[in-house]
Length: 460
Ligand code: BGC
Image 1 (cartoon, protein in one colour):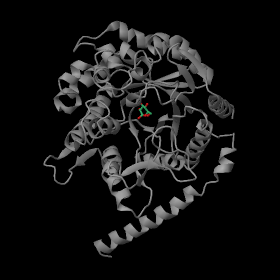
Image 2 (spheres, protein in one colour):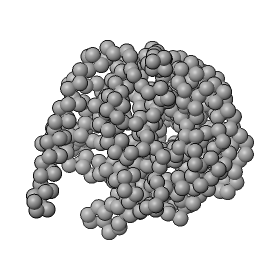
Image 3 (cartoon, helix red, strand yellow):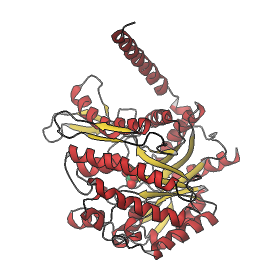
Image 4 (cartoon, helix red, strand yellow):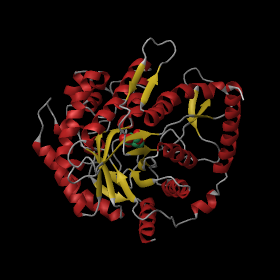
């Protein structure tokens, strides 16, 4: 067979498989799934919940950062002291324990640990030592994220992740944290969602530094973030406890889908984003090479990790939705995100999409490393869809596990209502509702379902 014929056959086969598998996954019996209470999850599975420091302690605590500056400059709701997690963590650990989870993912805040360049704050490091000790005492395995969207101002003033020469500063900070905590903590995430950091900060302009559709800079930063992940991974692995630590990168699997598959208006815009935000990174995780050249842009964004070493011990998968793009007759908003009639829209501008979650897990399992679902959750202020969300998404995860995917843990986002970045406090993702004036926390009805699932799966 000639090379061309071979390629054509592979293409047709692929198309056939994707049509067949598409109908196979959408054929699920959602009603029986919704009525299924029992899940069968492997014995050592980590059931958890996740937060980030800035979203839960706010700008009053995490001062001198790209985000506190952004809040001051922009007309967005201010984070203030958020849930005051920095001070209330001992009580909040009780709330975590009450859920029955056996793991908790949180981020350490760089600005607290290194408020000035090269000056490390021992008290802040000890704060995290105490948080980890208290979690461990409560039977909860800590999972640490080293970077969750927030940079100290001194780092940003040097150009932050836009400059390759600055990567060293982040690596030095990670080494410091690892020195202090690796005796207690085994699970480490280097960077939370490099693609979302660039999408929101350099393409949509709704996160600092607020650049709008700056593709060259977005690609440069993305390349640098993947590069620094590799540097950090290799450095930490060579330190005491490095050989036993599990260190991974957290990727948000975000793929846009057209409402009408034949409509180029709805299909084409997603193609570029899907390539930059998903395919390029997944290729890097598979091959160790990040290589993107957008036609018409002079620069070539390229990095190849050392070939003789692994890139990660696990992959952290954050999954929310496959947003559905629909065209409309409007000059201002020619495209909106929507849902099909039989689907539910969340409070965020995307639909519930459990089938997409299944597809994402299947895709991520191609890397042959364990997967942790480091974030999955729904913004649902009325708490009317959260239980169904949990039932359907956990069902989807179960299906992927049954088919051989090595999923080791699931962290619901989020423990409690917190600061949803540019959306402020309007988005309620929490298992606990929070009154930000009184700091009262109240368990939501849907959280009982999560508690039951965990209890049953532990008993099985
Ligand atoms: C981020 C979280 C955010 C969540 C919900 C993820 O992209 O890691 O910080 O709160 O999505 O929007």
